[in-house]
Amino acid sequence: MASRKVIVVAGPSGSGKSRLSRRLGLPVLRLDDFYKSGGDPSLPRILSGPNAGIVDWDHPDSWLRDEALRAIDELCSAGTTDVPIYDIAHDGRTGHRPLTLDEHDAFVAEGIFAQEIVAAAGSAGHLLAAYCIAQRPVVTFWRRLVRDLRERRKPPLLLVRRGLALMRGQRRVVADAAAKGCRVATPEQAYRELRASLRPRTATIPGGLRQPDNHSCGATSVVVARMLRDPAWAAEIRPRFAEVVLATHRGFHGWPRRLGTAFWSVAHRLHEIEGVRYTLYPLWGVGYLSPGRAFDRLHQAARRGLFGGLYVGTRLLARHVTLVVATEGADLLVFDPADGAVRRVSREQFVGHRIGLGGWPRVWSVVVPRRSPGLFR
Image 1 (tube, rainbow, N blue to C red):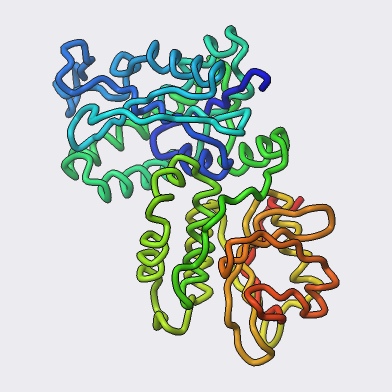
Image 2 (image 1 turned 120 degrees about the horizontal axis):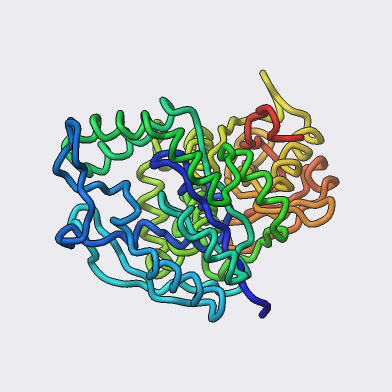
């Protein structure tokens, strides 16, 4: 295989780096796993202000740059490396894990110090692109605070103080990343540009990913969607795929389990995976789309690299949930959780209600990204 390349994704904590990296569907090297352990005497400390005396985890000296660069070099040259597992709760490393690129010829390296490796990666011939993800400071502050409180990273008052300090310093962080070779962009801008520069995503899905019971087709579809976006997570949960699917189905809200999957559960999970809002359009009744327009919306989204949900059934009842994963020419490629296969569906089959997914012939409704400025240009 030709030399593999790295996409560097930098940006302030909470700006959306991790979500963007998952959406690209490439292996991800988490640069934050290369932090020094909490007991390391070389860690920098804040010298003044309300946080004086605590470790300055936002200073590059709290991070092992050379180890991160060595991992990038091994991935680009050999396609595999061993990376640390850093646990914030334990204030240090708890082990190691293999990271393998498999058939991918590119991967993402993301973290708050990612800009520190741009020059070295470029000099070594490994760099494909470098981005600094930036949103309004107040948006970044809120997203970071919600995440850190949910994960119980530090005491709440300390998180608020740190978050306010980071918000005040965000423009400086972004300017520093730009000066070190990163293109500043919003998550959506970066996603569109990177998807255009990468090879079209394939619909290769490992065998055996079938729904474990008659009611979990929707959960199977969204779990497979996440697996396609996050190869490291896919490798982790593959041996217990059925268990994860059933747990996901139990986590769906507002609908008796034996009735299958409510559309808002599919829309919510696809939003979490893709980072864009989804909505359901029936093919009848109030707010409906014609079959032709529904097909076009699914095809347009898939060409932009976004998943879509497809409900099928009889004339009177939706019975089965499938996942549109890609396009092939004018056709859709649809993952069918009934047997784990990817099937090609033409416009004629779709409009004529002759698709046969899960044994059901009729298209009932679609779950597609909401239209937003720039998304479907």
